[in-house]
Length: 399
Ligand code: HEM
Image (cartoon, rainbow, N blue to C red; front, top):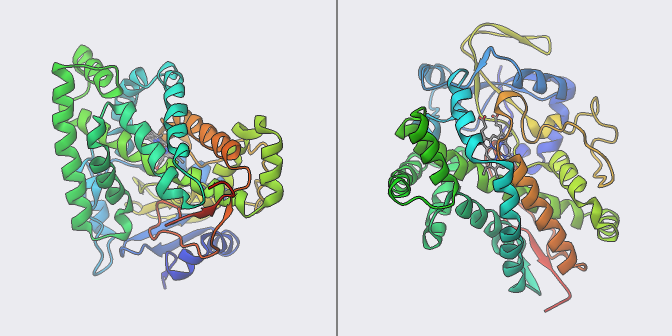
């Protein structure tokens, strides 16, 4: 019998469900809410090993049948990956290396450093308008990463709201009507196609222009790969960072001693960001992988052609890896947490996400030292990919 893991109980208490699986069934054969059969890996060592295993492929482009083969009756997995497959996240070596190398050339440490003052400015502008009681997600945590990714890619400011709306629909894919997800992905792709063409004629000082040039100089990225890569940066760079800010603030607001410790020593903020990522990171399970041959993970045999999901959220709470794994401790060094993944697909945007997180937490603590939760009624968003709240109602003493 295959049990459903991603059910109502998971929505209410994902950490409780994962703790049970790590103990009882660390590599579980289960079905997703979309009716797809998967093997779900939950222990730290197994997750890390699986993310490093070249026998687990991400290239559904060349193996479109794998998804279909694993669908239960009534399942439907057709989603964004099917519309925009030509990017590094859905590729294996050698394509993966070629596609990632080209982006790394354009998305440099210097580019991230140069964005710092602008991120500070955008954050300050948002906070200037806030006080009293408000939803921290709607008014701040969604806004800042959306603005930053818009700036990074060179999307004209008036288009930001529309593009971000499409991106959110794509990310919520596992909880929505698949037709809606595909339509949103197609609209984004059409928009980005025009934007890439415009940047070719009229380059700016942005990442898409830099990628267009890298593409033209070397002819190593096709036009479709360029658009698909821009799409990936947009989608991967947005909602993840929203939940880093919101989940981290929730963790602090629920633990006054940790809030006070961080306020007393703001130099701890960069390290605290790593602890927020470990303790309650934005991604529950990684994107799908499939076995190209039979593999054994954590003592469990998995046949060829099977889908595998690894849970980053679960791995980071594994008591075999962390002492007091279920406690938030802003003074701890969480070492090699897996919130940004591991291996060749390790998050390319991690340096930018870290800068955004550091600025957001520093600013929020400075500006609102008396911030508190305005409601205990909190709901996690449905879906097994992202781990984030619907709303985070907060209150501050200042009007
Ligand atoms: C890949 C997490 C922010 C761009 C990944 C992966 C994870 C991740 C777990 C690997 C997925 C897998 O192996 O299945 C996060 C988190 C973020 C964040 C937790 C924020 C806190 C960003 C930002 C950008 C970005 C800001 C860019 C603007 C990417 C890209 C990949 C990726 C391009 C694909 C890398 C590859 O396939 O080689 N991210 N991400 N991410 N991320 Fe992020």
